[in-house]
Length: 95
Image (cartoon, rainbow, N blue to C red; front, side, top):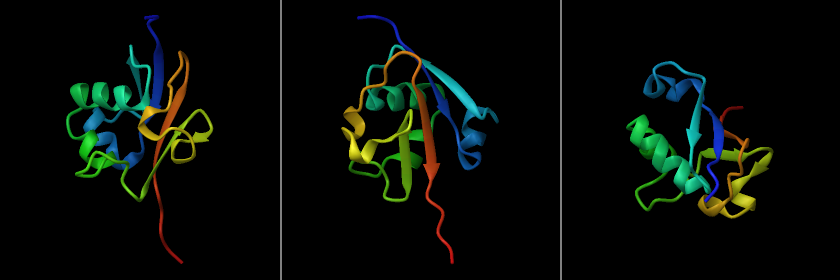
């Protein structure tokens, strides 16, 4: 397997888990699920903020691989090619 590296943009609310980093790199992950596993290993607590108890994306968290909303792609099986940019974006409610 070819080694891939992706960047993950971390929202402000999750930055305490990444030591304040707004962006972190993840190596060797071919899918979004693998990216989240590696993020959890390096930054414990991220998984529970992004995934629910059933291991699915939380309803009010949007995740994009490049500019594609993973809910309309393959969800956690969405491919994360080398150089991809992943954005975790908490939904904002209000009126």
